[in-house]
Amino acid sequence: MENNDSHGFIVRTQVNYLPDQSDEPGNRFVFSYTINIINLGTQTAKLISRHWIITDANNDVQEVRGQGVVGEQPLLAPNQSFEYTSGTVLSTQVGTMRGSYQMQAVDGTQFDVDIPQFVLSVPRVLH
Image (cartoon, rainbow, N blue to C red; front, side, top):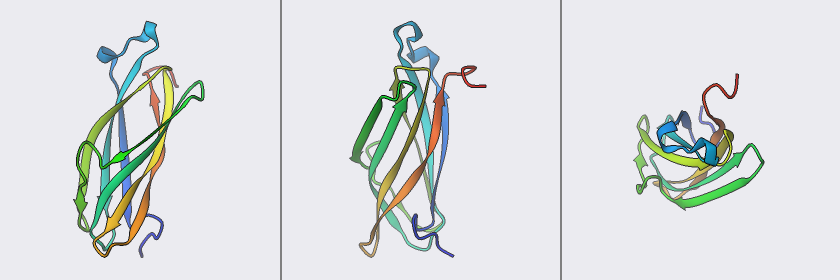
């Protein structure tokens, strides 16, 4: 059975804190995140654009919109996946990211795939 809100696409995330690129006394905390988008549906679709909502521990929100991901607009056939790594900078040790990908199926249908919220945290800050 197809999941109508995401057309069978699932998104997995993995986060890494980058201490060598961060400046903790200067309140600059750099994180990389790896995203794996998997098409478990029945239609081929292209990732057209992205929308991120990034919130730090002070409840400061950054919204990021753009075409594709890492300069690409991957076309995902059923049972294909696409993985990429990107990054973000926070002014606090902890924050969250969530968002959506805007997709277009080969038949022209457009739909969003939700990116579930995930936590950005300096190691040993959250227990």
